[in-house]
Image (cartoon, rainbow, N blue to C red; front, side):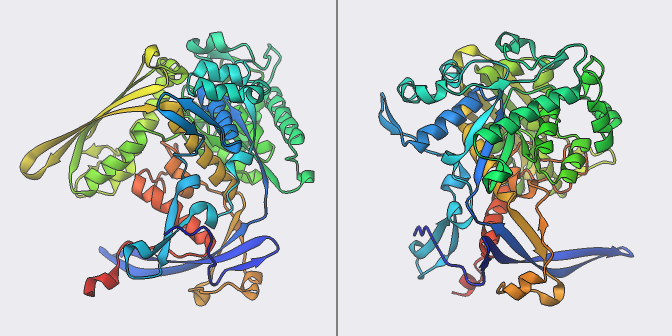
Length: 549
């Protein structure tokens, strides 16, 4: 049964903060003199969550693109509960595809039957912002207002757009940043709304211009510190940039100090090879105290930026929206390997006709996407050492033929076609082939993911965690006395919770031991987090009591 509101024992609330204990049971592994020893490890934490209402603003890089303009249009339609007619009947606005809006967790049962299980929505357990109350603006290389952008995108129905026209026409993007080789040739005709760059312009000048846009947005919408509880996020949803050369990143952008020094230089062909426009947006965001979410596959979140964000107490998350084909891949590969089969070949083919497809028809931009799409199976393979091994160079043995193809076919528009083939080794050297054909609305899958990214990032910015001393664990009830003794630390890493929404969770250029791509593990992590901050413990999948019924 669905229950919208519950009271959880042991939770303590004071001064707009909710304190909830979370007890974990895991293992500690040690190795000595060739012997591997495993011991039980129990830890306790207390989560502190600010539950007071808070105004949230989001600035989108790529506001006038299909994703950006559809996010705005969709949230406005949901806010006003709009309805429109299609040939199949009357339709109403919804948030299908959003975990925040639609997911529930089981909290137990009031009887013995399965129908007696009590389910509670995520949004009832955690103080997520209301998506329809989020303030939205942003940048775009095109000067078109959002109604014109939506008409061009061909995503939403004309009758709905007619109702949204007054609101969307009033929304226009700030000038965007592009220079040197960063603007793909396929985007040049759209680019009539750029921040001016001349021979004396420095990267710092551009960052300061972007910061002025963020400050103006905050002031107009009452999102400054003087206006009360508020926060602002910046989300990249623009076309994919080409990836920077990793050697240039290591040489020029490994630390905060080197990054800041590079920003003082004049825009020129050499430094612009590694100082991408997306990096300047990210710097502007963290300098204005904003969380930055990288919704595209380019390697924007370089080590120097990550260090800089930490020093300013700001959060970063990325990379690349995980929406259709790649989300399915993270599930199906996990299922096959988890079933004891050895996946040997994955071929993923896409064709689409929207501006994303047009941009990805450029080789350098496609390469960014190819990297994020192929990396999605890495941790799934690593957790199956009986099926696969890695040599000293990190190469998988036996190898997996993993191919990704993306083609631009204008006629199909936003209705992307995805064809996948999975070939696996099975019993007695047999072979199994699974072929899938998927037709999906590319933008309408991406936008709910953007909603979830925004809501979870806004929530995590209001969460702090304290580790409980072993002598005090486990904690069953949080008290005022206990809280007064704890040292709470703010969340500084979004990825353990938010990796479900990204194709290539951070870090990209460092140790990836904590990166999780498998769908089931990512979904479980989100559910555990929502339960934890509400004071609910981990929900085990094994019903031990049923073994002896």
